[in-house]
Each structure stands twice: as structure tokens, then as C-alpha cells.
Image (cartoon, rainbow, N blue to C red):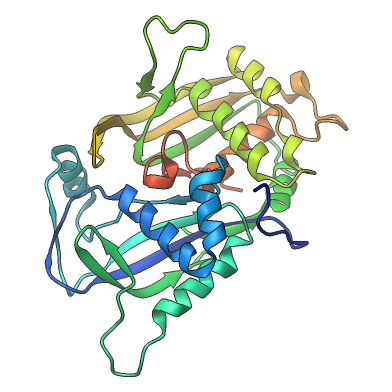
Length: 325
């Protein structure tokens, strides 16, 4: 199955925040991203079974991401609980949140219909169950979209708009770009030249791990006429020639527990210096964006698609901190 829905509307990206209220007191393990992932597919299955099956089984494009359940506790306490795999309490008086991003604009109306179905209830009736995570039930309190989230984790844009803004970006000789890795991030690395030592999970956001992966995400998600606005060869050469270097970082090793295994990685911030001048890699008719404009574009994409391994299950939530387009 190659295509489920087509549209003449601009290809868009969405980041939504769902506010959930527990329907019972209890506890839940601190990392449940894979369960949130399953719940999202369950919503889609009710709205359009063929789409859910396509996303789950028949397509590797990863056209959505799900965050872990965000508990109403201080960040440091949550991180400590994740590292130790200790349960966190659920309070009927306090809400939790889940962040969903959609990289296929046609998914939004389907998702919206599923949300309305869950919200429909008689006046004065007990709020209906919206999601079950483990053995815990949640009702839907609110959906935040656009740029209405005070923490700046929601938004909407089009691929064409990102390209247009990147083209207008004027960069100095050295420009800094900071990415915040808000949830555990890691890169599943396999040595293609030799399998003597096997693969490993890289625990540092080196440029050669972060940006080529984002090139692939852009090329598989953007509409055909925009897919080649970023070029893998140019980005890889820029990295190889050390045009982009790490100038600052505040990173910590981290781990979370999936159902079957412990996953290691890192969290924190990393600042990259993008070094010019752009005259070295000028924009052309075939390549309308300079390589540094492409890097900036990829950083904005990371806000929606995440970075690295298992972004559909709560890992790799990323946020460009400075000069977000």
C-alpha cells in the first residue's frame, strides 16, 4: 500500500499537546512511551483502520511521534524516577500531558475526528475514558495546538513555509545553533564496513549522527517538489570538513526502561557552531539553499520529527532553542 490519502492542500507539520486527567488514583511507571504509541494507533484505528495498519505495519516513514506521559512533578524528580525505574503517583487533582506530532497533514482530520468521538458525552456525566496506559485510565481535558503552549512545544507549519524562511535567513561568518534534547536520545549505529564488533547505541549528539538522519526524514516526509531542498552529500561534506562543530554542551547520560529492556542515551543541550562563509557553498538553481540554511532547516524539522532512535515511542524529543524559524 503506497498511498492512503492524497490532498492538494499544502503539506503541513503539527505538534499537539493533549492534557489528560487520571480517572483513578494510583501509580504508573515513569517511562511508558511505547504504551502511548500504542494508544495513538488505537485512536487512528477507530477513525481509519487502514491508516493505522499502514502506519504500524506497512510503512517505514514514521509519519508521527509520541512523547512519554509527562507527569505533574518537577523535571529532576521525573528523571531520577526514569533512571531508577520507580513508579510515579497519579493524582485525581492533577493533569498529565502527552505530545503528539504529525508529519502527514492528512492525519490531522482523522485524529480530530477520533478526539471528538472521545469527548462526546452527556452533560453532567462522568468524563469518558480516553486513554489507557498500563492499568491506568485517563480522560481528555484539553488539546493545545498552534503556538498556544507556554512551554513552546506546540506549533504548526508547512514544508514550503520552512523552505521560504530558510531562504531568507542571513547568517554571519559563525552562527550558533542550540538543540535541546528533552527526552532520552540515542542513535542506533551499525558499522556498514565491518560487523566484527556489531552495532551500538551512540550517546553523544555528534553532527554526523544528528543531521544526516534529519536529511533522510526531510526527504521521506516533504512533498516531492521540496524533497531535494536538502542534499545528503552536501550536508555530509560540510560535516566531514568540520564546517559544523560543537562549541558548548550540557549533556548527561540517561536511561529509561522499556517493557523488555533498558535503553541508554542522553539528555540535555548541545550548541553547534555553523561556520561560513556561505560563498564556499553558494545556493544555485539546482540547490536553492546554502548548506548552512539547510542545517537550520533541519533543526526546525527536528522540532516535529524528533532526533534519533524510536521517536514514535517517546525518545528523541528535540527543540531548537535559538533563532527558531
